[in-house]
Amino acid sequence: MGRGTPVTPEPVRPTVIGPGIDGVVARARANQQPAGIDPDYDLARDGFDHLTYLLQAPDLQTRPQVDPIAHFLARGADAAVSPDVNFGMRAYLDRNPHRRDDNGVSPYVAWLREGRAAGEIADPAAGLDRVAPLVGMTPGEMADHLAGVRDDLSERVRYGALGEQIAKAAAIEPLIGKAWEATNQPRIQPVNAPEIARQMAAIERCQEQAGFRPARLVFVINRPRWGSGRRVEGHIVHALAGRVDPADVVVVYTDESGTTPAGRFPEGVREIDFAAATRGMPLPLSARVLVELLRSLRSDAILNINSKVMYEALGPYGKALAASERVFPVMFCNELMTQVHWAGWSLKHFYRTFDVVPAVITDSQFLKDELTERHLLSDEDRDRIHVFRAPVQPEIPVAPAPAATEGRRPRIYWAGRWDRQKRIDLVMDIARALPEADFHLWGEKVLQGDPMPATPPNVRLEGRYDSFADLDLGQADAWLYTSAWDGVPQLLLEVAMTGIPVVASVVGGVGELVPEGEAWPIHGPHDVDDPSSYAAAIREILADPDDARKRALKLRERLLEERSEQAYAEAAVALLLPEPTEGDPA
Image (cartoon, rainbow, N blue to C red; front, side, top):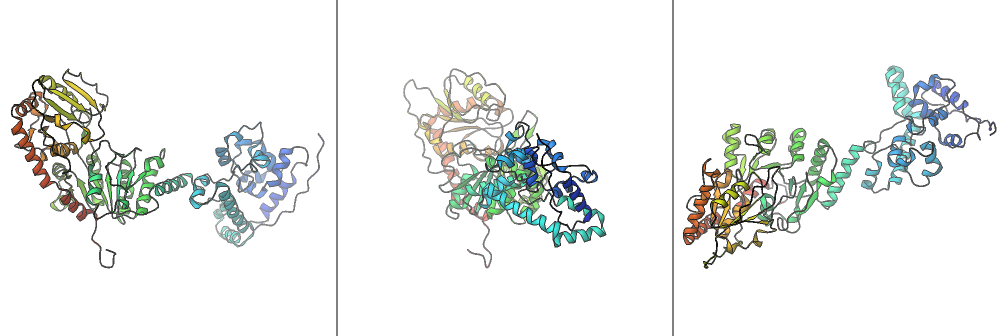
């Protein structure tokens, strides 16, 4: 290889930074290698900005023999200083990891030689790829746009009035001179903040699912909850169908993705899989995304149903959110995690959120009384807890009584999760205490680590059902409910409409559904754990099925009067839909 051709550097254009740095740049350019010795060096030289490099590496400014180009190339993929304001080594390798070990070639040289023509993006803004589609650009178009912004900024800082102002300020306060280094790494928001770009992209994805339209009601729910029943979110939407178009309702699933059971919502309700849009995002960041998404929907009311992300957001953003949004936590019964440890959203978050929300919604008078007593609420605060008594569905028909045929064995129906709360172990003991009857159990195994109890020969495990209407209710002599703790179970509201006699443990809000004379409630801490108490109640039903049916039909009639959809709608409208004030559209 020859000695190469000496290179005559171009004259240094005087900057407003001062003759000192201009001289350093001129000296560094004079240290360049001759052309023709190293093709990688020659290629890097064409786009190398000595001023940009030296401002980022002030220690090199005091080394008279340094060649910035050789200094940069020697560091390869680990170079921390950029030769070009529009090239970012880390961002380039994140997008194109195959360039890190490219046969010893500097990633910068590889980009100049072939990557740039192949469309590989080397822009230092790590959030560029997420932001570009939000503004209708390709990543390449966004990179070109940002390059233009940086080049313009560099021109004005180095040679224009903007730089002159920095120089004058630095003459008064020398520490301001540190700004010269920062001008070579301009942070253009939000593309230079990957987390912010990611948050923006998540909001865009959610808004796309919502059709980029506002909403009147927003339900923020942890996940599409199991079961075919409407649950509180379905009850509210169906009850308000005459006042709120289903298309003006948005449901946001924050903690887990999933599919909503058919029939829970009327046709037209919009659903957002927020959990998928923010998957892998730290909880504090996803909470911020949720707040901005909710604000953008501009709704009349936001209902939080067991959303961990929403409760997380109400901590730092509760007061700010309350300035523009009306957020209503919807709380249900707590869970007994062990024999002595209770947990639940109301235990953890009622006292944290109560002062920043207009009201709290519960499904039972039992929970309202419990919250009042636990937190020593005044009468005024107690009135801010609203009980939405879930409506019954009158369209559920009365089931025919089983025909009394010779040799027929009585059938007892039970449904629920196979776990500690629903006392699957107690059900098996009751079946053993009633060998003359057959027990049909619907549900799925979610035992949280507890072993499945042994199944007696008179128990049949039916598995999970898709719809309550799918069950052969005309074969049921009685319905058994054995929860250890509960709110107001949707299942019992459905069963009550069928006229099937109900035997149920009175815990939590269950007592609001099954009084003496209309059902067979099992009271007291001893009796609710005693299989013989349930067995005795079932035998009473089987001994006089006609009287049992009369009592069950009384239960149906009472609940039809107390828990009508109209009454539910009136309660929901009064709380959730504010009356328009003068000047507002009706």
